[in-house]
Length: 142
Image (cartoon, rainbow, N blue to C red; front, side, top):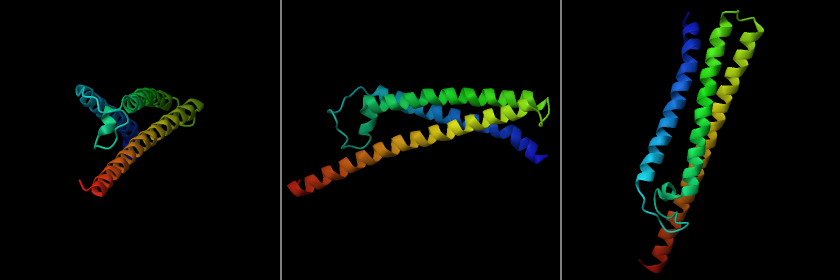
């Protein structure tokens, strides 16, 4: 009995988690766009400088749009799975619906990994630039 409840809740929990990620990205983008101050070109030597980079913000927005599409696919797959259950778990429709759900979950994971990689790489670039700036300042005696 408990596994049936988990099977029903899991897709909705995944969809809720995806929507929470989308909401967090939206909040970050809106917060950054509120600050219209432009840093010098290619200035990554201060903390959060990436949040003023239009190219980086565009990447985040593209990820958010992709996440929206994945959320739709998750909801569609859940709906198809529920409808196919009526025809029996041995039916071809049910197996196809399971495959659709598996593909949506896989897309969700790939998008999450892609987002983490983009953000991690950019933070590392920023931290390296900050460290280089600090070392340069020490050498100059500032």
